[in-house]
Image 1 (cartoon, rainbow, N blue to C red):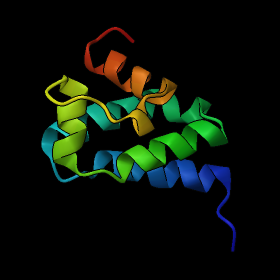
Image 2 (image 1 turned 120 degrees about the horizontal axis):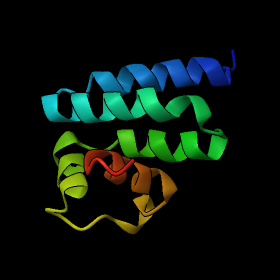
Image 3 (image 1 turned 60 degrees about the vertical axis):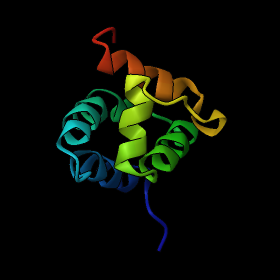
Length: 88
């Protein structure tokens, strides 16, 4: 069975809130609540790839402690970083 876009958004919303690292749970949960509803397939693809990364890496990229890999340098990450910095 093929996953509908609404079911996919629900799954990604859940994964955003249940990361395993409290800081990421809060930040990505808030991000998902604010943006997932407006994402198209391409944005969902980018966000899902990002969520597939380790929490320690996600936190390091968001906080700028480590450089962001080119594979995640996109509009979705720009929104995540803006949300983290309170600029969204």
